[in-house]
Image 1 (cartoon, helix red, strand yellow):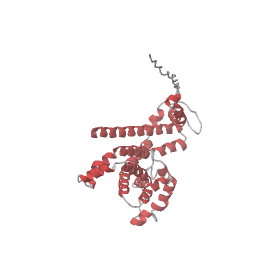
Image 2: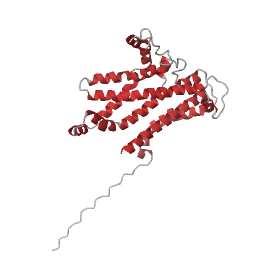
Image 3: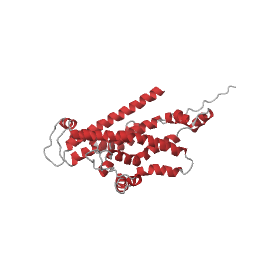
Image 4: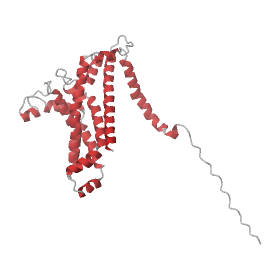
Length: 306
């Protein structure tokens, strides 16, 4: 007798879901709102501002016509523009170095402290939360007055901190360092807390000192953070305006007048919007060049170290 084995039932074919093509496949539907805002509030104003820099537009009215690069030619021949640009570069150099260095030092101190860390963090980061107007009034009314100010009262001097062209820029640098060093401190502190602890433990077993750990472990691993902080600080210092405008107005004798204040005065006091736009784009080009150069320099250092 022959036994017949029945074949197993054939499974029904599974329908393959159709993959929708288009924006949803690439996530563009989620990016579109941000992209529209980016185009409307950044790209379009940038293009419009450049168009204005090529014209004789005047917010007070008058004849508006295309002048090509005449505004740029005039700006490069304007000694007041060069003076304000030099003030901006000088402020950037004088402020960037202590802001980066002190941010690192404060972060190292707080990271190694074992008591009331929250108080130290608040002390270093707290001033950064203050508006520029509050900072300006505080230093104008309490720190820099020549007759009853905190500095002259403590040191027994009578220096005109905001009235002497020789020290006015240094005074603005001191105010800015006190005000904004907390941001760099916070970035460094976050980077320090991300360094694996076992690296220090292995170095301690090998007999490394605290200086050896700092030089061979901490600083190299903070390289990327330092590059970021330097670029951000350079851009922020090149765009200085608020505290100088509120505290000195660019004086005395234009010794602290930054290029943004010069563009503001030309555009809203002399009503030469086209020329002010050209001055602004000169600063924009400087910021782009400095940022790209700094990033390229740090990239070469990383490649050489690896």
